[in-house]
Length: 192
Image (tube, rainbow, N blue to C red):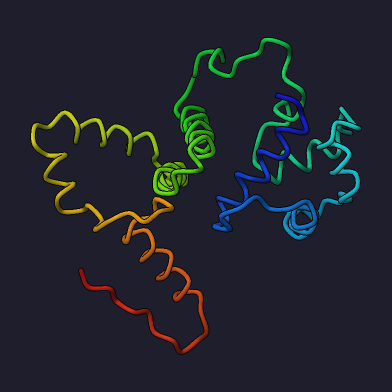
């Protein structure tokens, strides 16, 4: 993957993680970087990076972008010819495992972005502090005879619409918007 593609990908992921449902645009990225890291980056420079007109970053820009996107600065280079991310070196510790697992889940969410329910589930799992434990819990649920069908009966949303959103997901989004709404408004409790 080329550097420009990585930056576009990170903008998409950042937008999803911030609940925007879309990539943050270059102007928004420039403003957020300045507000959250104090770093300076122009939109035209960012555009040149993404288009490939500037194939390399200055060290300052690399550090600023790495800090903002919370990635290793070494990620912000073109991948060598024939590089495949699944051929990474062995995982040496649990904190590294959690970070790699979270990146893998976010990457999966982007691959399945047309399935809104699956994308939301993967991003929710990636944001959880103990995503590894969540996956191990899922394994235990699947290995316990009869538990998965029973849980699905209890938790299954009523139906999916054309966008793949379930009533439960719509309710969560609506409740989240109401919770952030004007002061004095109460959250509506949805009965099932």
